[in-house]
Image (cartoon, rainbow, N blue to C red; front, side, top):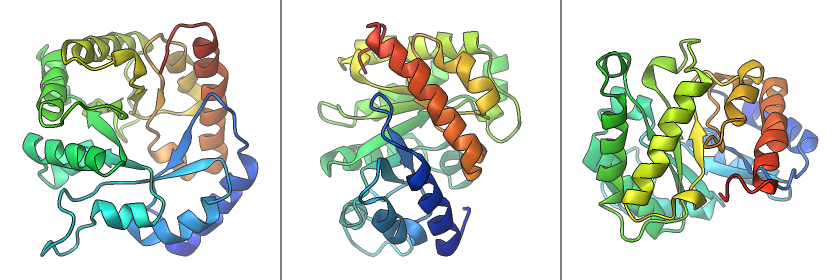
Length: 250
């Protein structure tokens, strides 16, 4: 919940001017609903794509305050974040709710970015892999032949806290996620797996160099254009290199 329409317009105009298509990397921004219309106009001719922060699972109805998939598509939205940890924790979105949103996004040709992750207590209890696997399986089981989606691993304890999982820990979890996707019958190598959790220009290089880290879901750093562009440029360098070398296919 950052930036007015005017503030969003200023920030995106600057980003759109400074970011040129890096080919190997997709750069997407997800502003508040109030700014989506303005953002769509600014980004219509550039290399940056538009996403939304959430959606409702119904096409229309008596759901005051909610946003339908058709409303998003009308504004040229291509991506939508589903199951963000703040939505789960603050707005009590449980597994079935996240699954319905995920399925609805796919059915309406929106690309969902499914967020999964464990709390600090769950990690310390050794249940982090179990928790993340459960979130993925519950979501995918509710979608028919899921494809054209991304997963963002965001350990709850590392969001907005300044804490960051080590690159080794992130790779272990991302590798686990890819194995779970294979077990679910998904073309796992075609699913981008992003890391979200206090990602900055200073630490993104170590993360992007890992085999199963295909990008980032950037939080607070996205509010600073210089920092955000530095992260994107590093991704273009390292993630693009992995693709050229055949290490990943997503």
